[in-house]
Length: 53
Image (cartoon, rainbow, N blue to C red; front, side, top):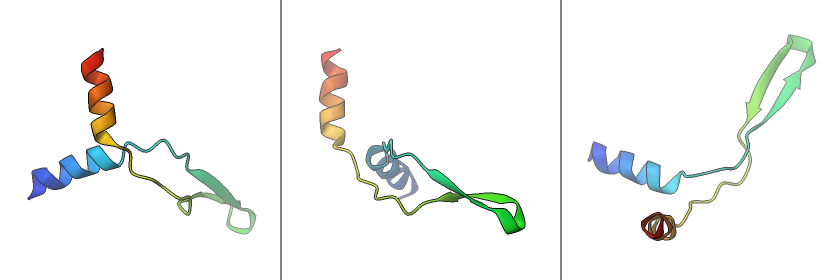
């Protein structure tokens, strides 16, 4: 179960979406904003590309 979960994370989360930050002046801290839309990648396409190389 755990190894399968790790595999799914690695296959799905090949995510290059940048994480922006927001600065809160009153408390002098910068916080990551995680409200971007993320998409899972097609692992089979990546695997095919890797096999071609």
